[in-house]
Amino acid sequence: MRGALSGLTTRGRCLLAAGFAAGACAVILNERDLLRVAAFVIALPVLAAWLAGRARVGLNANRFLFPARVQVGSSTEVRVELRSAGRLPTGGLLLEDAVPYALGSRPRFVVKRLPRNTVTALRYQLKPVMRGVQQVGPLMARITDPFGLAEFDRELAGRTRLVVVPRVTGLVGLPSGSGMGAGDDGSIRLRAGQGEDDAVVRPYRHGDDLRKVHWRSTARRDELMVRVEERPWRGGTTVLLDHRLTAHRGAGPTASLEWAVSFAASVCLHLHRYGHQVRLVGDDGRVIAGEGGHSDSLVLDALAALQPSHRREPAAGVDPGAGQEVIAILGSCTPGVVDALVRNRPRGMRSLAVVLDVSRWAGPSEDPAPGPDDAVGLLRGAGWGAVVAGPGTSMNQVWRELCHSAGNRGPVVRTEVG
Image 1 (cartoon, helix red, strand yellow):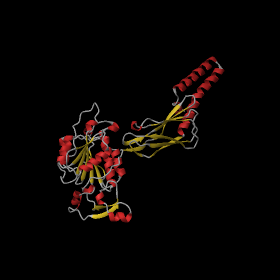
Image 2: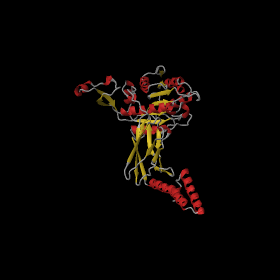
Image 3: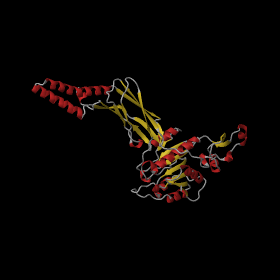
Image 4: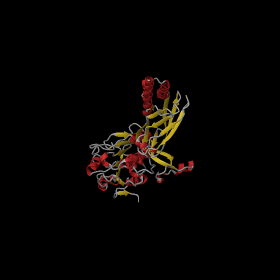
């Protein structure tokens, strides 16, 4: 009873106190009618608290997400299933599901009637605007009586994990040469003591070199076929993501870091689609995804949980590609940062870089960042292909320019829209 009375509202407590006061006066004045009224006034909040407390004990809930893994900007449906082993007081049930700020406002429901031993389903939509591993919940229920004399709060469902992966843009084409496509320099390198080439004929994919069309197979199958020279895989592609906090500007979903993460995800999935082994590494040399696996889901989940690094400079003294081809996605770079990247990088190995013009993402209160031209000039001087990207740049345009820079060591290529 003490637990039930703890749920009395201010109104219920005042009514209970008034009942006891009326009862005391009735005894002193010997007024039987007033005593009856006092008994009724005392019984009403006690009965309301008992009914509300009993309804609280009989409630159960489960939460389901469809899907539990969603891309930034897409929607997921949350389904909450309620079951009651008792009857609700006619005051009803107020439900509120805790939702992180990045997922929107907290949904609220008022359930007037909950049939006994029957599942009642509640649904609402979430549309996340920021990547990350989010926790939906807990689900809190507030049970009240019709007179507002008692109320109880109860946690019905715990937390449910929602993985919000970065937005992925479909890319077109591959850099020429090396392990990432057709071209003379790639063919030469493949024959440099790495085993015999194997000719493979497969259906044409958008972006394939038309010079590789195998006309005999095309005529036989009545489908455009291309000839690809393959070898037993010994290398791969390393995608280097610069996620240093000091190298990026902006906040929230429009920050330069979010653009870089989204572009890294797009590149990894694009190369996976063409059968390439991809290692995704951070500025500290740590492998984010790609060790011992070839999965889009692993890459996206790793990027969803990625946090900014507090390093001032990337890892020095090692080849950032670990002997593989490199596609680097860089934030603001000083000459020292560029030197750390290129110093241990073999000059004959394919190395590509996208340098973000992070000053264009900067807010009014943020410190200015060095321009990208000096960094790009140093990279190109070291034999890297490099392009510059801004906040209004199409990722597909950046990728096309990067593919072009793979066979071009000319001036800096700056990609802008408008």
